[in-house]
Length: 148
Image (cartoon, rainbow, N blue to C red; front, side, top):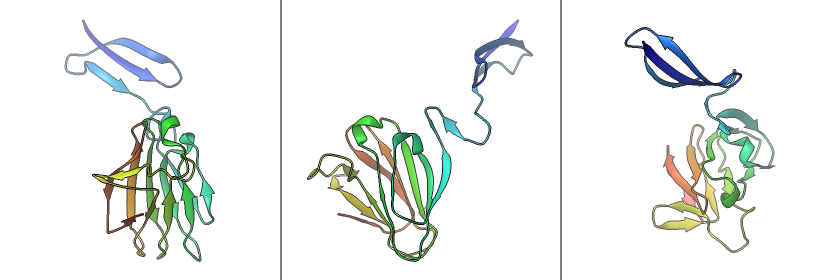
């Protein structure tokens, strides 16, 4: 007998007999999302300034007639949350950590820290940030952005 254990969002933890070669552990996602709860990777479009919560983790498309500013949730209350911001218009959109303690610099890119990240003024520019419980860590960028 070969066992496979997997998590199904509607049934919870499921264990069943399977054919040899299909054993292991698997995760089944909820319809319309990717990622693992509580931070499923949702896709959201923004055309005006926005203040985000940890539950809004996912891909955020930024597009407007001018640059817009998006405020990340507090890093300490968002452990593990992953946000990816993509410029969908040629503007220098800004991602801030303004919900964190004023005067702190919780966005970290290696040894460099800042309180905001400005995307390059190009369509398709992106930055991925993840909370480690203290800072928003820059996981990667597609072009040159600036940390301030």
